[in-house]
Image (cartoon, rainbow, N blue to C red; front, side, top):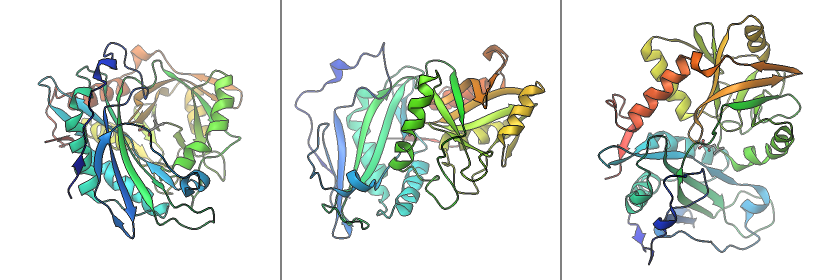
Length: 352
Ligand code: COI
């Protein structure tokens, strides 16, 4: 598919301070826009990053037909830019689209458009280990209609933002038993904007208590662990890695999660993907068997958990320098992403 390109007159790259990269504060010069109308995707365009004008009646504002993805691009020591597993995000985006009654996007827009956009803005991909370009594809309904019905018009966009660490310190996690995120038949597996909207009040409440994120439980029994608000969760219990399985469709199928499990299995670590209850984690903690707990996500990467607060019990994890498994996997992933070791899985996709 052709993509029309209109470049900025003057780049904003001088605003990009590589010595102080925050998450999600600054956006690269260009963005990609593609509209879906009359049952088909129209020619996409790459244009200067900027505000968009929309009718106040567009249905995504009112009813939340909106989905997104998170992907990262890295620059290796030779200055080459590549994207981590974008085809997996492409597949997941279309799975989310289906659940939310939105049209699938072709790879000629999602993947080829992303590569073109990043090639144009490659100066915005940091060449520093620990930093990357965070890629945010998203789609929202643009029908101007306040009645309830699945929309027929949509906009797909990609914006990019240089990104440093999402969590600057080990995370303090609040095990959420008052509110729920997902249940069988719901939208838990989709990267739907509404999943995050519903988490804002619980997040506000736990932040007041000094915690960083929710650890969600299942919506029926309130005891099976699902995921953390920004990432999947893994526990090292004894010498095994244990993480909730995806079979109920209530948990986001994380691409970092999948990469971590692949690398651990390759190393010979026993990995169990199965239902995990909070009581099992609590018991492991009380027996001294809970060695490590960490999140895995695109934005968060590998995020160690310092504390899990559950039902009046503060479970404090052992000091980080004693952690072996998550430190190993974090380094291994970074080495693949920054080109320090061979990418035997072909996870890095060049942009050319
Ligand atoms: C990501 O990790 O890419 C996400 O979408 C999570 C979001 C909370 C930043």
